[in-house]
Length: 379
Image 1 (cartoon, one colour):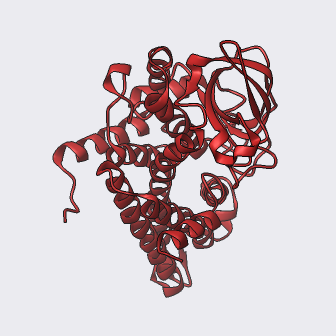
Image 2 (image 1 turned 180 degrees about the vertical axis):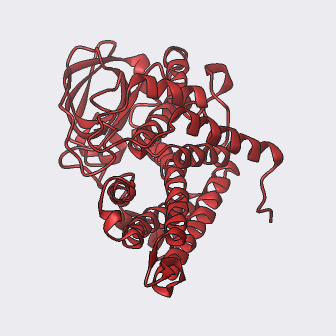
């Protein structure tokens, strides 16, 4: 059993961290808007957007573990968690399934642009009445000459208002349940694509999210992902990458929070002592460290199992649950360590809490992860 990194792996992490800090030196201020195309191109240059994609398309050809380390470094170096989240959703929910299941023509046309950051992708899966139950989609795909007509509305499309291309899922036969679900790649400019206004969200402010409606939207056969009726398996494949690698950004956020709490506890004095000398404060920070390292080991284990080709449902569910619940609890503790300052926006601590809340909801809620764990252990 090996817990160390090779010299090359550590050098890659350090290079990405340094490049990220140089590209995004200041945290976003209160009331900042959505990310810019310039921000997106910077992430392409750093290598985050193409990390798991084949080299022939401009990617880094990294496995899940090395990809997660790249995302972790970006999450640590960039305080704009909404931007990093949007980039991770673009990569794991869109670029990864296109690379694995897209037609040769679609891969050649889109992957180099997605890896470089010249295009932005949005994953359109969730519907108003189909969230955790992703097999009960109302959006339909009707076969027509040369392709399919899509009809339906997708809600909570991360990057949706800004995206140039969407990976979406619809059913070719509502009676077939998950066996009728089919994946599609749809260009934003396609007739019948209606993009809604961005939602006003609690956190992850830099990442625009909104509804996307498809009205008699024609998608040619070459833009079907995989086989007709195979969309559920494709979606679960992308969820494996997302639940493991995307959540590495929260390890980076936790590293930043921990560093901030330690600095504050050393500098802040009350009753003639550093507040870090008080057990109530030091133990709270120790708990943050415990959650961070526990979640980190589970996430690395999940990514390792994916790279080995092992069954990884249990490992990924444990990782996702530990990271999301850990970052939420730790961000709340960080606010209390900072006291009144933690409630103000200047230090970015309250932003970390707001950005942590949705981690227990997207990519499968914490309750769904517990259901998966229970099933995998034989309950």
